[in-house]
Length: 225
Image 1 (cartoon, helix red, strand yellow):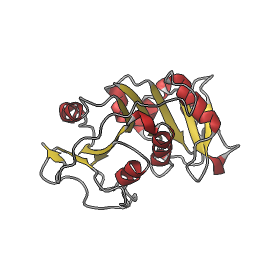
Image 2 (cartoon, one colour; image 1 turned 30 degrees about the vertical axis):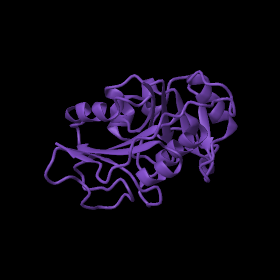
Image 3 (cartoon, helix red, strand yellow; image 1 turned 135 degrees about the vertical axis):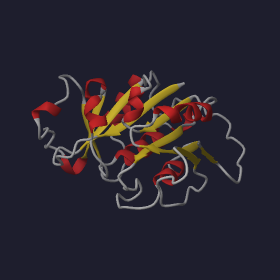
């Protein structure tokens, strides 16, 4: 299984936009997208507002998105061209118990892209990209913990020229490439070349015949523990 992980130091800074862009750029590979949300603070991953999306009766819930026309992040990833789009919700700090279920769900997938920082504790991805906004001081512990494993940093284009960390303790190691993500979410040629190089993929237009067959659609795709 080949894996990309996209994380970020806080919420609402373009992580899903970047994941969608990568899926769109490399769609022929047949990606499974996995968004991981650790709850416990009452904040929804969809709009950043308090909500009741946390599972009430189970330690974790794994759902598969079937609606590419919806407004959720998982719908956006499906619309971008993901073969499958999953959402794993777990109690904060309790990702490990949910991993057997997640691994089972991904057992037949060849290309997986995660939107998560915490998954880095359990995987060795081919590529780990961190999305940042240097103007925002909030910094997740899960993001800080894995800074030394970041392969590249990406910031929104509107913040070009401000690639400086507000706290010296957050500075990435020297030599880590930094890219900009246009507001429209279309990846720059520089990002595309970098990602293809890290994954040992040919230039755009060469990849073909790699999409895995779509799984049979079922009416319910919810699994809980």
